[in-house]
Length: 356
Image (cartoon, one colour):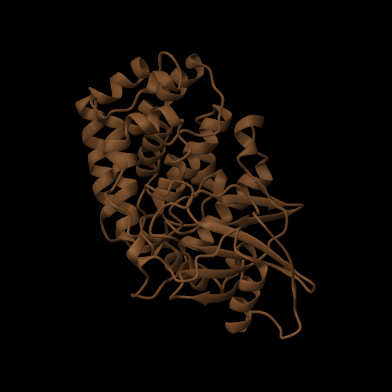
């Protein structure tokens, strides 16, 4: 999903569905010793970084700030008198919504992903690991600068051909990278995502109050909840998502994970990564380009530019499923579309799922 994107849903939906998604008591007893956040005194943070030899003896912290509005983890930009870097720490719950449990090990998955691609051309498109504290579930990363999320394409309704081709090229590099057999299965995160992608949006009685998002959206959702052919395809693709694969997957390859800074393009947040099937990343990517532009033909361009083996029908099915769950599931995007426009996108999604 991602679970992160679910947290961006309107509060009314979250309230009405809380019984479905609150996973019991929070595991505060397993909470990290050094819980670092924006309120941590600079002196304590300085001592912690010095103890881990992540600061030079004479290096001093000048400021600490949030680099953006993250939901899943605590993310800080630390500026010293010599440089700046990023601290990212996971919790046994979602940082912004602490009543929602989340796998604490997701930060280890992110680290493993960055390590896996550090010796090929993807390396210049991801932040460098500067340090890792496994006990505290904390990752020290290169500061990429003041980047802009590519979620602006939703507002602009367009993406430059150069950026699109580069994103497809980078994805191909990721998918061609072989990984060791001990790469994390990340199954707990995938199980969470599976519910939000392949199950809940297609249930008639799922507790979602879609008309609280936009009047008429509930009615638009009904054809997908009552169509046995669609649901059988979704079930099959969902089973593949949970099955072992042979390709390194980013797992959340969408505009919120794409960053630009001048002419540079970066890929971040691979905490949903796993070894799966390439069509998942390709389909998710295609879905978001289609939702941004309204043009289904971008799937063909992505498929043609992709340097690797992939099943076009499966890409199409994943893309259609992703569009559906983004429009009638909890994972609402920062995208403004009329009910008529959403209806058109959902009709496109149906054709994509049926691979027509």
